Length: 170
Image 1 (tube, rainbow, N blue to C red):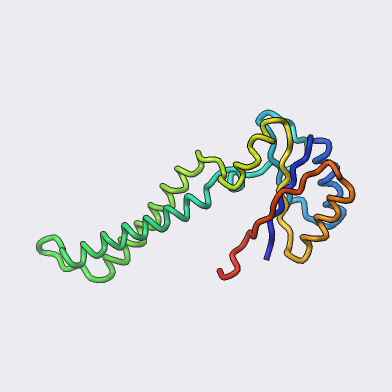
Image 2 (cartoon, rainbow, N blue to C red):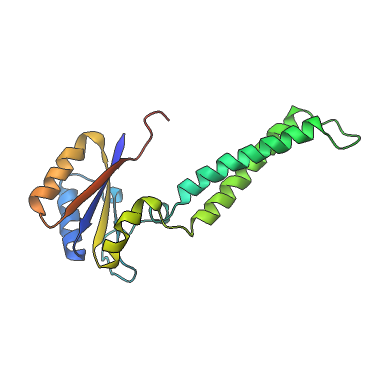
């Protein structure tokens, strides 16, 4: 299971030094993401993707729920109140639920790409002031070691929070 750690860094130079130390601690480059004020040149640091910057996954999940719900209701209506002269079976209800799920995920994710990630709202003011947010995904057993490395080598860095990246019961 992985944990997502958040660190606030004062500037890009500090972010680069911290990233280099984490690379030496065997944290892969693809597990480090950086978020800075729009227009900030991050150099070789990986900017956070849309999956991290927006509520895309949350929107897709909500869309999936409501899409399946709508599809099941539509399937129920099709099966129990069929158009005259037709005899739809259970397959029609299943197809309606699947189509509803697909439409729900698509519409929910499209709407969510315009919404900033709700988990990152707490860092918005600091990022607007010029700080850099470093997001690191590490295995659970490395969390304390990574925090210790960052605290020992970079006292200017603020360790803010941690979240479970993957659910305990998938």
